[in-house]
Image (cartoon, rainbow, N blue to C red; front, side, top):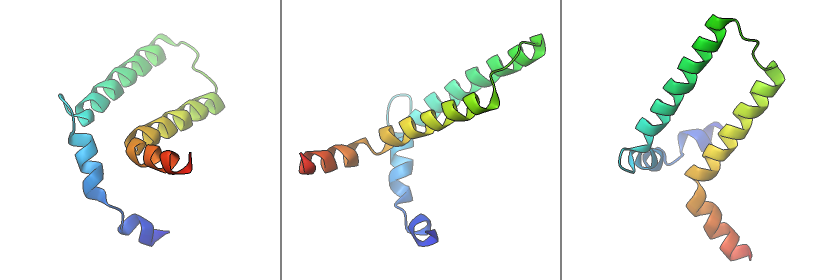
Length: 83
């Protein structure tokens, strides 16, 4: 497993995050900042937050969606070979 992580093509990850106008990394940072500010405001107002299991499920779905976006080309190529 560690070999896979060490030998991963990290340069492609950089290319994906640096792609676009503005770059995707800035879009992700802006979205993260907005969500963080909303979290702080809700916590300061004393609003009840969602259960931890729900938060973990939402975060898992977001991670999976981000993975699908990052590897969209490879997934489409694999599906075109299968179908």
